Image (cartoon, rainbow over all chains, first blue to last red; front, side):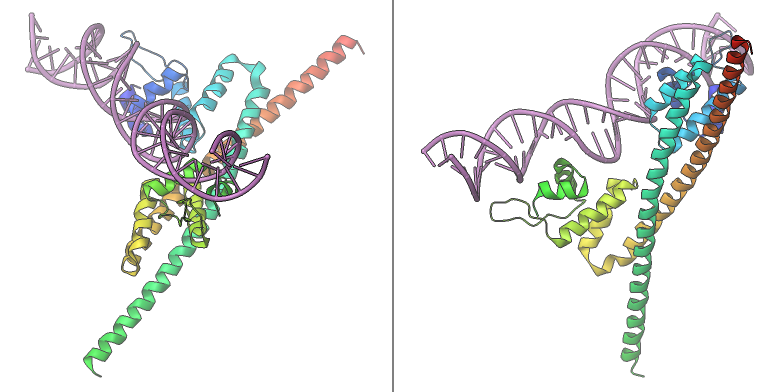
Length: 133
Length: 133
DNA sequence: CCTTGACTTGGAGTCGACTCCAGGTGTTAG
DNA sequence: CTAACACCTGGAGTCGACTCCAAGTCAAGG
């Protein structure tokens, strides 16, 4: 699969895909004779993983470290697990914070809704008054 | 309350507090005779609100627009509500994405845990073999 | 009176994460 | 044979959100 198609499928720009590879977020992608990237199954799974992790805000640097360990093989399993655990905990913490913000937004929206309803009622009253009945 | 204390209490740097005010995220804070900021109750509530919203990743620009509407008074209630609804929806969407990532991280961590356990068992077996009993 | 320390401003610098560009190559269609 | 097109590279530019700095002011203590 060539880069344009991958870009389409995963919603990442071709620039971003090349950038990810350049900085080591994704190990060198398979190329055809002409030097053109031709993503295989494994490459795609990596793109998917990185897209997912980046989408949740995990820092590029951390993911680079992680992918480097993956490349180094079985001896790094423990270290990799530690990275994932730390990032999982950070992510959970961020989500809790966001939940509080979400609650606060919902509350404020409710308040606005009530205020708008009240305003509307008043308008009706004014109309009635002006209509004189 | 002076800026250093606000910074302490809310965990925002004094630079950030001044920056927020400069760009209009927080309306001009009350000053004492010497021109030194002296945050009152209302200022603090605004700091708290902005800190909360920024903490969840709402863009500074959107919040500036929102705060501007707040300053403009009651006629902007509807518009403000619309902003909050949109941001609430975006936030909820981001949280869903993050939940998927969280699940994926948890799954991967489990896999690593199992792999490490297996490795350990093998080590024990090797030890037993080498001990010869 | 002078120093110290917390404050002020305007403006420049940094950081993370892309995003864009110029100039070059390789394959396919006319 | 050449034009069009999708790809390539290295490097520069952009963007959002701070963060830092120099130079100045003011209030309190020695």
